Image 1 (cartoon, rainbow, N blue to C red):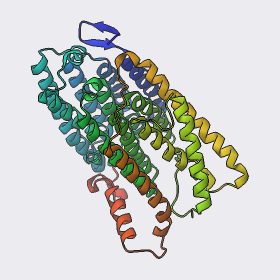
Image 2 (image 1 turned 90 degrees about the vertical axis):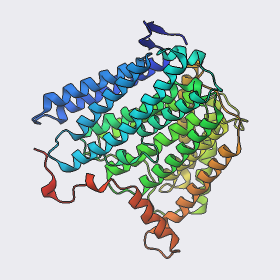
Image 3 (image 1 turned 90 degrees about the horizontal axis):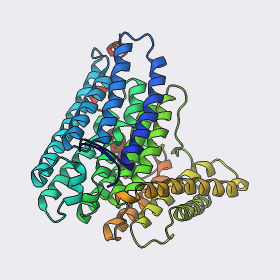
Image 4 (image 1 turned 60 degrees about the horizontal axis):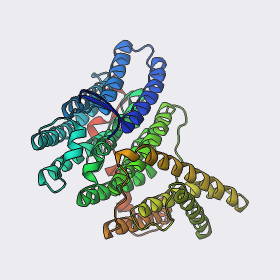
Length: 448
């Protein structure tokens, strides 16, 4: 694994360099914003120092070549994040949100510590590079370590069923929410990518990762559509995007997951830093009626987008491996994006919408191919053979997406079966923050 090493403690390779750029860019932007946003706060200086330490600790984590340096950088980063989330412990809701996050992160830290201990005992080395070069794919202990690392990644990236901490963290100051959703929540994706050669040797675990990612992606995307609060919508959106990232890891397409991670990080930082004005994501509202002709027009845009995406990543439109699933997810995304425009546009604009959708899909595909090129020597790109798990998951996702589009409008007081309102209320309730993290009365809001 080429790069620059420092006595087996740190290693600077393409993955570390990419993550350093992302952390530095988001960290600088958030710090500049926080220096103005937090003015007048009694703990202004302490807040900025903690933010700086957080950026340093994350940089240490992504460059670590030593198992236990990575482990303690992981712990220190999460501890700093929790401290920043609480900020003013007199506010009971913020304190409870921090405690809920701490409990979830403790599960992840314990899992990661056990995984690293197993790897050390099996290999006799703490060097991540040496472990990846000499591990035995058939050893059950390595499989156990991979499962434990997956649990750690899931807690960090708010993957179902460890998602509650993220949607309950809305009491955090806006700069903390920005660096949390744009930076720290991506830690799970980084962890899996760092140990990608191990995961690529185990198709069974990759299938589990893919299914968990698809479940989280669907739940996060669905819950986002039924929120009426901007921050809750953004939190559910982050959950959904982390699910898509995890699904790409499960497909063996780690460069695509890292590209997704980078774009999502920069986009979500921008949304949170502007959330106190009029931040909105492109989304479909249930009170819009969808006619069949507009749905077909959106499908045409989705097909065009997925075709140009396949060209950009140098893959056939009808790929014979898991790249086909990625193209299918691109088709759904492009169709949903174009539908949000078509729903309020005239037919004269359809050619422009098709061109715009195709261009955006092509540019995103170029970013994925760029990551594949950058990480070529690290062997992070290994599409898996298609199996029933992949195809059935994609089919179920498409069916649920279509059902949501055409049944969503029925939930606004129109006559329908009893099942849909029940499912709607269950989804709404499941997407709410933990009750102890909600301020129900203005007198309970203590933020001196």
